[in-house]
Length: 285
Image (cartoon, rainbow, N blue to C red; front, top):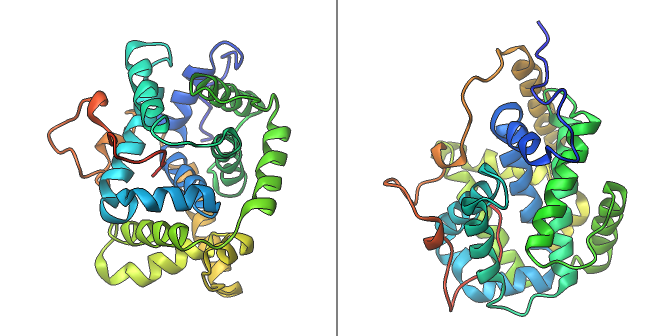
């Protein structure tokens, strides 16, 4: 039996926040988490971003908490409408951290482009079904709305322009930086702790196999090889085929309930997430 999309009949221009919640909590929760993790990981390869994050020492010394705080803030911004009290509190906390540093609008636009482009590319290759045109438009509208509330200027009006921005920015700005490499190393090490310890070398190789050559080169990571790439991508595609056969999810999959989020076993307040001066700018787990 083919699972039907829960978003059918919703208007992506007016219901984009509801559609985004359905996609993130019911249709593609695991894929959303993974794709956003890889999306923000690649921003470390821009020296002005990776170097700044390293200077805060937060991502090399408190990696788990930074991962958790970012994932929880992004979920809190989306779990209700952006203009709800909860959504405003999350966006306000994100903006407070950004204002602690002189981050260029160009870098902010690039980070926003990773939210728009990378999840869609992931879905096209590894999703258990392809997202519909309305779902793709809803995701675009959601991140445009989030970007405006973050004070980002000159936000691209279309997906195609976001994609061009991402590819051009990476071609022009990706490069090796010791700070960016340190943040990437700490993040990869954290990822290995989400699985049994003996699997750590495989998890690391699997992660490297999903990175494009220009991203590996920017970090100074070795090319994992054609076989590793084929096995890693094949495993994700096999997972997608299995998920497509499973019953539709009945309960929402919240980030806060995932075992890899470990910093707040007794709950948290949105206003207390993240860092405070001196602290860190943006990071998505």
